[in-house]
Length: 279
Image (tube, rainbow, N blue to C red; front, side):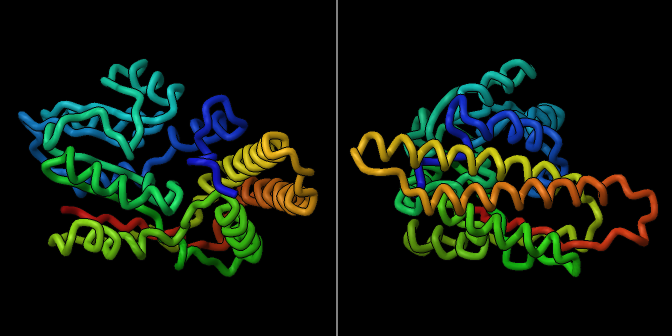
């Protein structure tokens, strides 16, 4: 049922919560900081799918480089401009850059959110425009916990991702896809993991983003039914509504754990790996 990147549809229900969540994320920036050269003088980095968080641009400038944010969502691109970063609106499958015009192209959690039929084209575009590339995706295979609420959240998030055409385990496939797409080009691979941790505030934001995504998916189904002249898939809407309620319940439990003063009462969880492929 996937509509192209339904999480980030302009004016959608998911945007506000997703902007808040992405702006507060710290660990992905730490991963990017480790992967990027310490000296970026005379280098221009393009950040494809930059989102609203301005901190990578600040890091690049601190290291002496120039930063260009690109996002398909105009709201997010405008937030980058408001933070003094240079930003353009554009699509990863048709980048508005000349061949090899950027010293480094940095792409975080974009490929996994694309419909499967667009992923190869996106990788080819990144290769066309970037002299060097860093692509990151999550791998949820090891996202686990002794906390049954976390396991319930993961199971339901996977179902939502299936409807949205998002591959939550794409990090595990990223190296192979890049090599297959670029005819066996040599790549570097690095896997990052935080766990086990007790930072439940990150899960609170994720449950809210999932609820917004569910509303988007419900709206997409209603719009398509009208366009195709067919009845709305009531079974689908009922399932999505049930998952939305579960996400609300998980979010409440995570919020309690995020503010629990006694750490011994807070079970740990192992969050998804970040897999980085460089070429």
